[in-house]
Image (tube, rainbow, N blue to C red; front, side, top):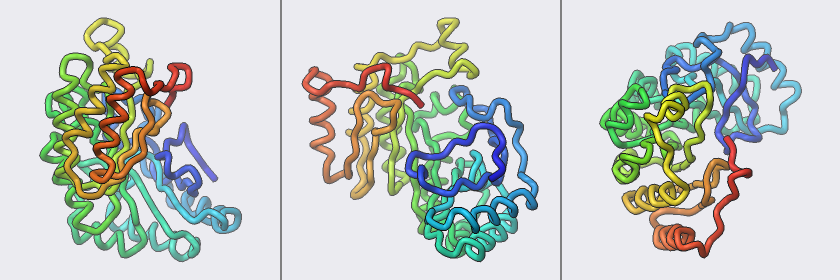
Amino acid sequence: MHYEGTIIRPPSEADSIILQVTVGCSHNRCTFCGTYKDKPFRVKEAATVDADLAFAASYCKHQKRVFLSDGDVLILSQHRLIELLGKIHQQLPWVNRVSLYGNAKAIRAKTVDQLCELKGMGLNRIYMGLESGYDPVLSAIKKGADSTQMMAAGRRVRQAGLFLSVTALLGIAGDTDSLSHAQATGRVLSAMGPNQIGVLSLMLLPNTELYASQQDGRFHLPSPVALLHELRAMVEHIDLERVQFQSNHASNYLPINARLCRDKKKVLQMIDAALTGQVALTPEHYRRL
């Protein structure tokens, strides 16, 4: 397989065939993200992608899922995506799930009918980074969309019948707007109606604007206790009949894997127990991206 630079994929795609279709991210302005800073965005040559598909057809017959990277494959034209999904179906007929990242801009550039068409061609899941539902934070981190646009994008994915997995980021508001961020994020997640919510904790990377802001004193990362309060407020403000909620990413201090709203009371009790020291937090040296 032909890969350029560091390849990032969601935790649930660990056993997937990773097919790199684009290089980098078309937005690439988020102040907290250092993943694609050295990779100007471009679409990979069709011949290179075709060669990788041929390799997968010969050597990846035990892998049932395909994840399309890098960070912004949904930004491709509808024609190119339909052509790609058709090739996956034809050459990898055993694959039962195709997933990709999609930001709010890329999702809103597709109509519901176009997303339905992609679903009909084999696309199953879209991973979307919300990070925060609080507009001052979304603006500060240069996310490229406000909460209204985020909600509209999420709803569009769900209207098309696609599985929607949304990530939120503890600590991204710093120590000043921590609870406002958490509460607003819970409300926006509820309005989006995702199938899965993944919560990560901010870990500052040296090649990012946010790291520079911390170094010169303009940004202060919340303490572990403050992050737990954020997590609690976020869960408290999520009002969904059925969603998988996970904070079991390696960056988090308190791993949770639950079904909301069924387990909401138990999750809040677990967080409260962690706040009072009855449940141990993940040691700092075990946390990583």
